[in-house]
Amino acid sequence: MATPENNHPSKNWKKDAFSDFIHSMDRLFGDKPIKGLLQSMDDFFATASMEKTFPVELTEKESAYVVIAKLPGISREQIELEFYSQTLFISISHHELEMVENESKGIFKKHSSTRRLSHSVGFAKPVMGEHIKANHRNGLLEIIVPKLKGKRIQIIE
Image (cartoon, rainbow, N blue to C red; front, top):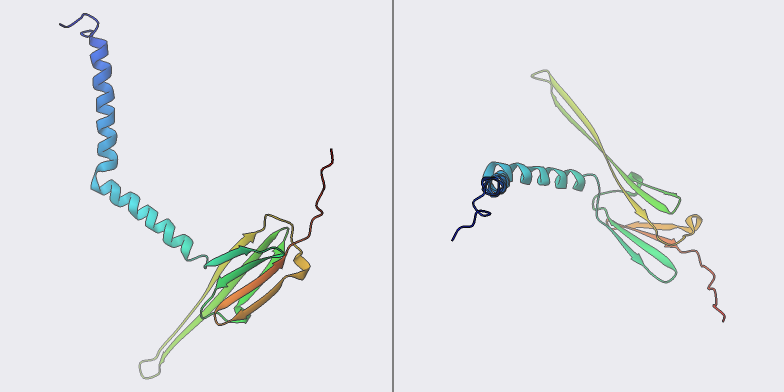
């Protein structure tokens, strides 16, 4: 049996309006073109961020942090390391020069590009920046960052 409360026109309108809203939202995010657009945006930002950095591993040991960067095909001269305020900055400069010359056709083409990749590593505990050591061999850059020894404080009663 229907009660007057359930048949009130404003309650039915609220249910219908909410249902319409939910249905519209489902359609908005469920249709293929939108999924394609959102996926394209995700792919764009994922690839854009990947090209501006390189793989870096950070391991914390008792007396030092060990930072290993995988840099295949990069020479020591292309690497720049800087340390400021608990943060290590690793930068790579890669310069390419392409020249095409065809004297018989009178064509000369020169293309130059420089790409700069960087990565920053922050340290949670104080480190001794003046004692950082780095080694580059077989495409791996290993950086040893010694920790600053703190003083243990004994709690007394």
